[in-house]
Amino acid sequence: ISLLKQVVESPKSGPKATQIKERAVYDLTRAYCAQKQYSEIAAFLETSTFFQKVTKAKCAKVVRQVLDIVCSLAPEAYDMQREICEKIIVWCQREKRTFLRQRVEAKLAAILFHQNEFGEALHLIDRLLQE
Image (cartoon, rainbow, N blue to C red; front, side, top):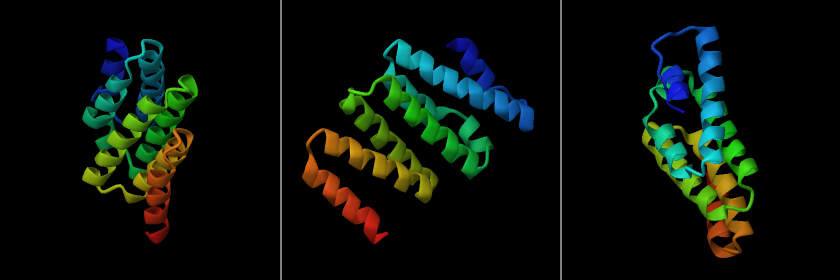
């Protein structure tokens, strides 16, 4: 895990370096999931300098993929998925990444639906539809 963090935080830039860092982010996510350190994933997404150095489109792609990896490796852990989604949404609001926030909120609504929290899911979907 520490080696993957070093790769992601490396000062090198360029298309090849970005591609390698992106792959390291995915591998780091899988490593955290294997060790059930889900809170570390959200903390990493919030603190990593990688997401500030890449384009908004690339950042959105990587964050969506990280969320998909977490959801696929722990498909029944809805509380953890909800927590990660909420942290990503807060980060998106802070970084002014509206489109990514909307995508993650849609995912959160699906998770809430699976948790039988229909009122909260509908409220979230209504807000998304109004935007």
